[in-house]
Image (cartoon, rainbow, N blue to C red; front, side, top):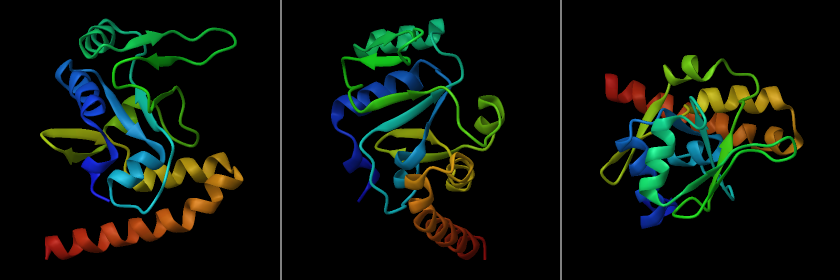
Length: 159
């Protein structure tokens, strides 16, 4: 499945608003793996932000018609409206470094005219290994195979 098939026009407009607004974020989890070519299926798209509720973030969300709902003691942070229905906010990635360190490792995936920042598959694997949940262990062979394919393609391109 091509990356563009994962998103409709409203979702792309939402991502464009984040990028145009210079919001520091990355797509993580299985959606990030799928965007890099892994044959993975997920029901949501996880976003990890450098700073939740920042002025940049709030302005970009407003332009996209999306509302940020700050976390409470009983609820995680949420996005509502606009093209944000499929997007979830991640506040921590198990087994990984800080957002700032991981941002230095991002790869970019072409999505129409956008270059969308995504967590590399190697780091997705590290996070899935750290969580140890059954559903994360189950997808690890697929992610490892995908990583091997990507690495071999990069080696071919370099030679």
